[in-house]
Length: 456
Image (tube, rainbow, N blue to C red; front, side, top):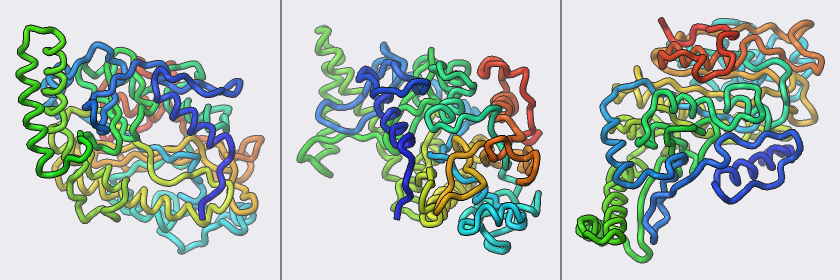
């Protein structure tokens, strides 16, 4: 059975889907709700006219296929640091991810949804907390020093709206009018004007955290870019593509402007296909929990893309599952975090096996946590939530503190108060991982602490 979501959660998804379709306008937005970052960015879709395989490039209206291909080639070989941002959509329940199983207040507030001592592994940095049994892969990573844990991350005066809270996380400030994402602004600083895959969304549309201003970013559907023609299959399609490229090269040398443009487009589309197509067809290594699951396939493909030295710097992707668990939380939550965290642990092992792990960190977060008190069979929107940073180069320790559920730990709405601001986390990542001044990216950065996220 699926959990029931609030109406706002469903509207938020519709809104973001429409916002990703540049030029098609937006559905009605309720008063006070922010327009997603990236809305209005120009979008070019690079594809064969008869095909469906597509890469959408945002913010590069003058970028042609030749520029795209040459820009990617020039950016290769940098061995630069990479961040993968994974979003748990809907507000993941922090008191199930890390449960205060021996707290009498927790047991009273959650008579049906509570976990019991021994259900999962103990959180070794604070034995008052216990990992959800399906989050055991995170326990193992933490034990190995490869997971930094923030049990109460958030911001002052939390907005419990899916629209607004996620928007704040994506743009890196508490401004509903901001139109660029924090990773997009990072790409504007560290990126180049002709390499769109430097900022890559794997959801098929532009995730707002990647919305940039000056440098291009791109979206592909499930780490796959391919071309096809109706009624043409292997092995004939490979012969077709060879001839299309050959004809394109002839046309590209023409003195006629129209033929030259069409020829270059055909030539470069086939070349781009050769660069990216196979990453969606790679064999999923056995370390992944389910070779047939799309998230395992996507993360495995991403690892292969990085291994092929594609010049990717920032990646955004949504995790499987839906965490707006107002109802039937016990029936969905464990399965969702099981496939999510099992896959992320496998992705980390995959990177290590390929010798890439020292270049990649993975940030996992949600727009807010859930209320400590259950409703009938689920939990409602809360405030502070849990976030993780995974990688061989992370500090691997808890950041912030667990203050319990007693007096002083809850706000006036009886929700958890954050002990670390999410912008502090961003500032630390920018300065400790990318070695750039966070003031260039995060408004008011000087006013936030810098917890140790990356090992010195």
